[in-house]
Amino acid sequence: MPTQLKYNASVAENTDVVYIIQPADLGLVPNLSDAEKNFAQSQLDSKGKMIFINRYTYKIYIVVVPEKKTMAGYQEELRLAGHGLQKVLKTDKVKNIAISDLTASNAARFVAVGIFLSNYEFLKYKSKSTPSVLESILITGEEYTEAEVSNLNHVLNGVFLTRDLVNEPHNFQSAENLAEEFVKIGEDAGFQTEVLEMTQIQSLKMGGLLSVNQGSIDPPTFTIMEWKPENAQNKKPIILVGKGVVYDTGGLSLKPTPNSMDLMKSDMAGAGAVAGIMYAVAKTKLPLHIIALVPATDNRPGGRAYAPGDVITMHSGKTVEVLNTDAEGRLILADALSFASKYDPELVIDFATLTGAAVRAIGKEAMAMMGTASEEVKTQLKIAGEHTYERMIEFPLWDEYGKHIESDIADIKNIGMAEAGHISAGKFLEHFTSYPWIHLDIAGTAFLTAPDSYRGKHATGSAVRLIYDFLAAKVKSKKA
Ligand code: BES
Ligand code: ZN
Ligand code: ZN
Image (tube, rainbow, N blue to C red):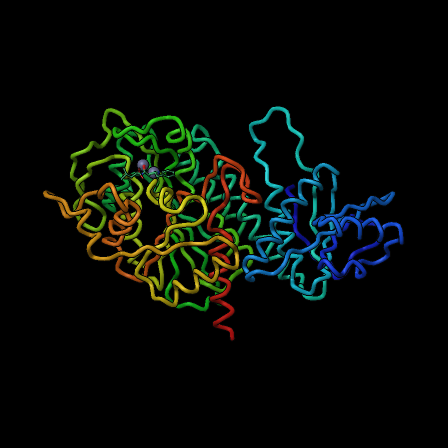
């Protein structure tokens, strides 16, 4: 059982506890002896940010909160403090930790998120391991409710679920395996799942997905997940589309191995994200009608593999000249995007580890966002980005970038120019949309090769907290 987040109105006696204080407020920490107070004060005077007091049967951790910068910056500092704390809790083999906020700034939940997310481990393939012993993180205080903390727990478990899916090696995760996982997740969380197989994908004429799959020995899948509660506030559904390339060799336009193909089990991180979001949405019973679509396949060379120079006909009927088989993500997403129009959606958001260009432009610090949705939707997304510190930078979809993908012999081609590759990829997708749409290129944020605080190393679960926050805010604003 992984660590769970729980709620209690107050801190029980004799339990391991974290007090969060402002620098001048040591006096607020209850029941410190004079010796402990003096010790803590001397630590504070030497600019200590974390103070440890070891009682016989339990430990007290005092976290001194940083100066407030922006609200988002302050809350991120708290998550980072949680990350620092998790390392100490691990060394101390703490099983249950209570968090008490003495700053009146809602600090406990952010520290809890930092501890929780830092406590992730992927030990499935370790024959010897010493898993974390942390069982529960208790958020205390009258400013929280049981329901709020339980919702947060579901969202963070959604992040872990996404991380697990993305960390899973390809030899254990074909497109069919991935679809089976979605079915299991749906059964657990309470949403419906339908998996379309090869013959159905053929009758739907999904030429993008079928072409990318041609070199594979495994069939493609197209999964439809649906959460439709009776109290849904939206008449038209919100659709989430996730790139499900379970392994990207580049195909005949083969990738090099180091720092490239060796990371490509993570090329289904968009699919992983939508599954994590659906899990959180269903577990928290969000009153919104939401559908997730995942086209999935691996991308390989092989006897029947699609080749540079091929012209393919997409699900929408448009023709595409394939000039690089490594630009496969846009081909499978395009089919899902045109398929989405049959639901007459209010909004479609796609998630994809789509381009190296997005990584070169903005690194692991942000997602690349673009789209045709309203300024209001984009602003709401950016606000959710500040709340969760899963930030995005918007790039333009100007007509001029459309020229980058003009083809001599087909309607469009699947690569742009040497520059602005993430934007030409966005322009490509735009051709297959006919509704308000947002594209999130998560190539930089979804999978890290070096540890980055509570995001960890390898799969981060990128976009799950962001989109849950965005959707939950939508519900609140409708209620108000
Ligand atoms: N899956 C890759 C993009 C990627 C790169 C994800 C690095 C994560 C980290 C994608 O399918 C791809 O190969 N894109 C090509 C497109 C190019 C051939 C137009 C790229 O970005 O190089
Ligand atoms: Zn590729
Ligand atoms: Zn790819």
